[in-house]
Length: 545
Image (cartoon, rainbow, N blue to C red; front, side, top):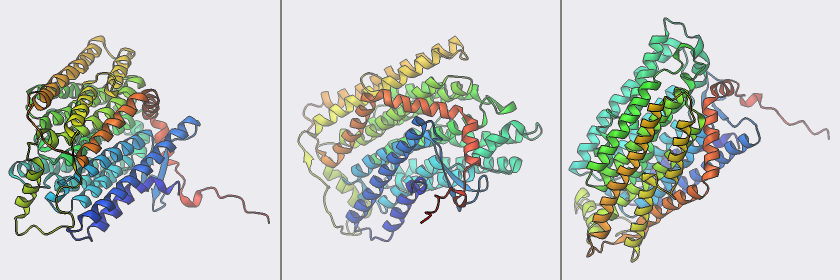
């Protein structure tokens, strides 16, 4: 059972999403509870897998888990790989998904059909992308999550949402084409798509074929840079994320990290110090694009006049920071800097998700709940809208809702701006320390990166403070209702951020081990290629009795 646990984050939402397609759309309550059980069970499995990876490292044992589908030996097998980074991303996805799902129960799921099924299929794609050790299956899971995200983004209709959704679909289809072309070139040169096998082959690729291989990797890189929202390929992101329903926008905060995850994984595997002539390839480009993306995000935050657009640019800021650190790590940067960046990524993703969930309650007028129900009726038509089991918004509106919302907004502001006591401060401080401790980084580049970190935090503080003043201070006569189903998941995400801040030492130890493992390319490659098949597993001795 311990071995099969690795595939559970893919199978659980897949089975739940397929089962919900058999339910009539009027049985939304049953769909919600099935989806909630699936997501909660996936969260439990993610915690178990993270503890497994952590325990393996603490005992000095191999902390990489493998699952060979079909029991074929690597590199022919479709292999799933669990290491520190994959376990951390699984847990981050599950926490954000559970909060988003509960929030959607308030009424957002009624604005279209098959919301909960699409949500589960999105989890299938996300979890599969984080676990797969094969480039073609990475493409498959990437397409699964994109297909689900198309339906979720268009969920609820509306002119603005449809226009942004069509742009989103067109851009991502083009990125998928580039990804497929890149994978084809890589396979044509090497004859394999297993990431570990590619890493072991990189030093021995002959000079005649290396440019073609690097071209394939570059095409893949462009596809995932688009998904990560990196400038100048991020023009589509603010409009799409702002137009999405609030719980969908929260899940999109983790979807941009799929691009960052893949770039981090492939650069550390294929362009590390032992990769022959390709060692350090693209490091300067990644640093430049990352810092330019941070500048673009800063300008976007300062220019934005709505909370949804600021949240979208906060996601861009996070992606740009991570990309710059990946480039610095590839250029010879230390593990401590990457550990701080991973800590910051977790905190910023949770804070951005919480900020997306606040968009609707903070922009709602006095008749906000009635307006949501009217929107649902308008979408389906008064006569065409089928009766459902549960009419009206789920859960009561609480009297202290605005005050709780204001407190959560303030804490979210501190986390995104990188101010104490929230964990964004710990991540940024660790990155600054790591940059100056790295001899491979030139002083001007170190100071430029630190200046951008500080300026981005100050810009986030100004942009969010302006929205907070307009919402909670300047509107004294505003008495908008806040539903319990809306404020509870927001408070849960803020509570997770508080736990990360309190246990920052333990979290930093984990991210430091993750950074160390990413720098140990040979350990990952050798572990995957030597993964035993089921019939090769050691069997316990027979009882002599």
